[in-house]
Amino acid sequence: MTIALRGDCDFALLVPTSMGVRLTPLDGQPMHCGDLFRLQATSAETNVASVSSYLGLPVKVLTTFVKGSPIARFIKDNLSHRHMTYEGKDVEQGGPWGYRHQFNLADSGYGSRGPRVQNDRAGEVGRTLNVKDFDLERIFGSEGVQIVHLSGLIGALSPETSTFCLEIARAAKKHGTRISFDLNHRASFWKGREKELHEIFTEIASVSDILIGNEEDFQLCLGVEGPEAGGKDLAAKIDGFKGMINRAKKMFPNTSVFATTLRQVISANCHLWGAIMAEGDDFHVVEPREIYVLDRIGGGDGYVGGMLYAILKGWAPEKWIQFGWATGALATTMLTDYAQPADEEQVWSIWEGNARVKR
Image (cartoon, rainbow, N blue to C red):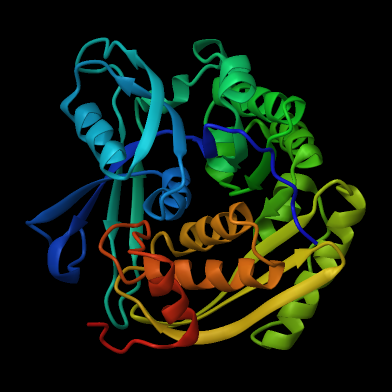
């Protein structure tokens, strides 16, 4: 089975997102003990898109910025450095208590000390993302997009962003753009909006070609009955997820691909990393293999990014999950929370377990 992609498009992949910055203490220190920090521009959705942009496919980002902000300038320069085209409104800050870009405070963890992440989203400018600020007919009609990747994080960020994602899904469907939807349930985003968001997420899922999420995502976002508890037994967990996917297929018959990752944490720096993907009637499983982890944050986004890249390249389905597994593993070796592959060969070497020096 293959996913037929629209031809003659300016962009292979498009992601709507709310950009922010991440602060990480140096040398693996906890946030409350650090006194030196690394600053990077980040968002889950551009983490996904980075695999394609670094490997040469044209990527576009739809977002919004704080006008005149040095952080906004930092983010714009970073997106350009990642070979991404961006489009978005510059919003007036509105004084010192007005809008700003979100801050992600990330302790990467080390050894037996697990990572801790705090999101400081007060005044987040991304919550103002509004469909009225973008010409969707131009973007999907005249320019053309092969795959749009939507995230539940943006879909639930505010009533405006929920409408934004829903209208993007409708426009994409109208113009033959394939839709990827990572459910990404966040309880704090959904509080008080459960019925509204369930309806919006269900409509987006109904037109999506690719659905991504863990057990809780499918249950809490879409009402799909979850797998029976499998404990730590890997085979039972895989069978349980397959059963849940088969139930999701009945609810969303137009979806071609369902995917998730498998992770068992040995320590902050050693994980067992695997994945499950269903395409059509076929299941593909990468049973968890040991990987060494510098920073786990962004590994799941790396997996999705690699899978979408493989689909965009028109490869056979078994390679979709293999390449995604490897780009997810690659992301965990980097100080950024997104994968920056040098070339396809580097990624396939990770899949093959070949870490020998290349001269």
